[in-house]
Image (cartoon, rainbow, N blue to C red; front, top):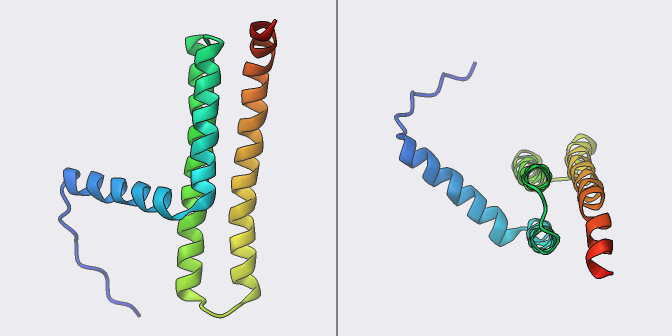
Length: 127
């Protein structure tokens, strides 16, 4: 049996520092996260152009955040799987595929939400 871990005395500022470091690591090293960031910038730009309501902004921000969270969790899962299973194992592959599928679902949902909110106002703006 594994002995319990000693209690960690981490302050709130340290905790935020670790979290910000994690965001920085995924933003710097993961191509798909960077693609999602660029897509988010495009959505924000379009939302500014069509002057979205506060309600629409909230929904768009939630959708964009969902995708970035999903991509971050996918990266964490892939990292842990690679650590514990350096050689190919079907269960490791399955875990990675499921995590990637979660990102795809989040991204498709965000695209649908953005389309629903932005397409008609963009069409009207272009007229």
